[in-house]
Length: 139
Image 1 (tube, one colour):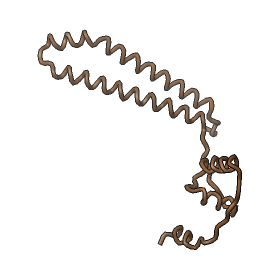
Image 2 (cartoon, helix red, strand yellow):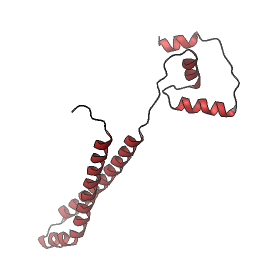
Image 3 (spheres, one colour):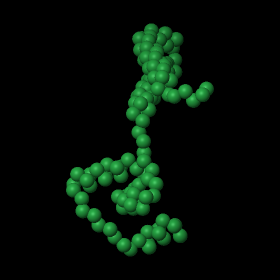
Image 4 (cartoon, one colour):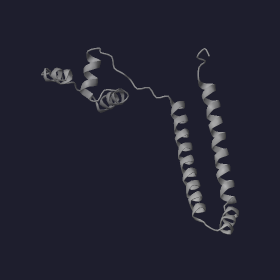
């Protein structure tokens, strides 16, 4: 049997506390920052002076992650665009057709290379940003 279920079954006493709406909202803000799943669990841990695990958000790391996700999505779109382009070229049979396709798609190639260079530059900027904001680990 799960020890948590067994322990919950033994809980028969109830404590009620009156608080203002502002106090209640403040308690819920604290609850949302923790790993506790319920208000009861959170209040029980606080009242019994048990450890409460608090989630800490690192805004700088969040911003880096958001930028990396944007770049991943851009690269995925570029990859799809490139795959469609290659599939179209492979479907062509005549050398003249392929030559015309290459000439027509030169601009697409330049656009893709430009976007890839921009992503590379943003990745380098992120790397520099992370290096500046990461404490030296003795390396």
